[in-house]
Amino acid sequence: MAVETLTENPKERFSWKSGIAAVFCCLLWGSAFPGIKIGYRLFAVASEDIGTQILFAGFRFALAGVLVLIFGSFKERRFLRVKRENVRKVLILGLFQTVLQYMLFYIGLAHASGVKASIIEGANVFMAILTASLVFRMEKLNLKKAAGCLVGFLGVILVNVGGNGLDAQMSFLGEGLVLLSTVAYAISSVLIKRYSQDENPVALSGWQFLSGGLFLIVCGLLAGGKLRPESTGAGGILLYLAFVSAAAYTIWGILLKSCPVSQVSIFGFMTPVFGVLLSAVFLKEQDQAFGVKGMAALALVCIGIFMVNKNTADYRIEE
Image (cartoon, rainbow, N blue to C red):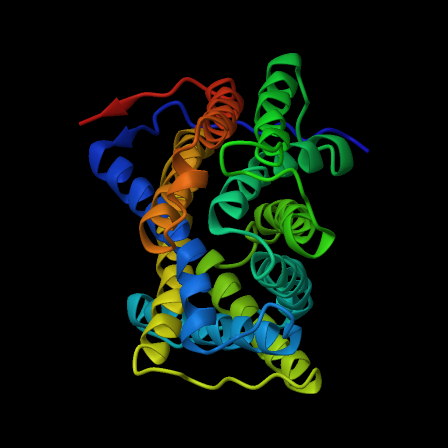
């Protein structure tokens, strides 16, 4: 298979406003880690209740799809549709980006701490690069990129080493599924890049969220899932999580459309940073977040992500 050469327009530059928007996206994504754990508590979702976990995810993403389509339709001043020939692409993308990625992630997060899940989820950048390079051969995997991946994965390994609040136990239903969700993310990232060449990326996102979310709802119901709000804040946290997906993906997509990919994705290292810090604040996981090994693991993941993105292209911010 031929290697696709990805080039960037040298005239495209990142403004300080774009930088703020990118950090805001990462803040939203990072807040999803404690947000989901809080949602489980408000809906009384037990760690062994897989059906309800899937149902919770389904409602979140179906609602996110509706929000994206409303925003896109308002922006385009017309109802946002996808081309008939691209319906299959929407369903395939929904399978990987919403169904597989978040089914695995939601189940895994119910059996892992928010801090550990945040750091492990940082591996999605490396998974995406390895998948694009070795599986789909869309770009070359050079030594510098490989080194960045290695440094990042050392952080993933370190977070499961015992001591200082981080235990040495790694369960398949917990950290294992969270790690597998990054593989689904990697595949969906490549599919998004391919499919958005001949389809509106906002429409693609909205419809795949909606279709994937509805599928998860059906799966959750068939598995016996039931959402039982335990407080008035339950509906609010569900709406917030839907907003996180809808807003962050829409803004990120707009940034990718108008700026070089590397200059946007370099901000991705902020997601696990926000995830760990917000988990520490809202989930009372300070021992894991601020322990020596927790901070070292987080630093390795961030350094690895920075190395990979920094070597893709020069990074400059202009007024």
